[in-house]
Image (cartoon, helix red, strand yellow):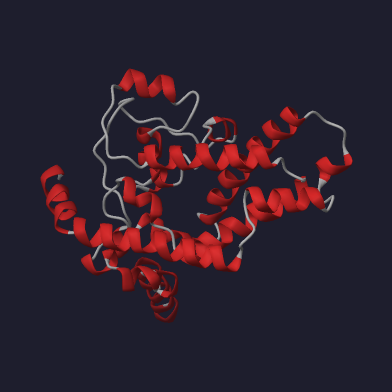
Length: 257
C-alpha cells in the first residue's frame, strides 16, 4: 500500500502544486477585493466606531488580546467542525480534503468560496466582540505558521510530537484529520490550540503515538483529474458519487419492496 500511494503522489505532484498555488492566488485576490478591510484593519475600524462588546467594557489591553486570540481559535474550530456536518458547507470545504497527499501546498487548497466564508465568520466575530487589533494580528500570524507546519510532510520523534501537541496542533495530529477513514477524518478539527478537540470530544490520538502511514484524500474524488485546477474550482458543484449511488440504491430498494 505504501508503494502504491507513493507512486500516485509522485504522479500528481506537479499537478497538485500548480492547482494548490493557483488557489492561493485566487483566494487572495477575491478576498482582498471583496473584503479590503479584514484582520487588523477591520478590528481597528470597529474600535474607531465603538462596535463590539469590548468597546463597552473597561478591561486591560492584554486581556482583550488574549480573549480575542482564544475566541478566534474557537471560532475556526467550530466552523471547521460544522463544515464536516453541514452538507452545504461540506461542498465548499471538501476540496481541501481531495488532496491525495499532504504537504505545505495543502495549506492553500481552499476553494475561494470557502475562503470568503472563513473571512466572513471571522469578520463577524471581530465586530461583535470589538476584538483587539493586536490579538487579531497575533492570531493570524501564529495560525499561518501552524497551518504550514501542520500540513508539512515531515517525520519527527513520537515523543516530541506527543509533548508539543499538548500546546499546539502538530503535523501528526492534523494528518489524522486528512485520513479517508471516517473515524479519523471526523476528528482533530483544531487550528492552533488542541484544547478544543480535547475538551469537546473530537481528539483522536495516533494509534502508535507517532507517524502512521495513512491514505489521505477522499475515495470518491480520487481520480487524477481532481488534482487539476479546473476540477478544483467546480468541486463544490459536483455530486458525491458515493452519496448518489446510495440514493439510487435506496430508490431501487423502495420500488422493489
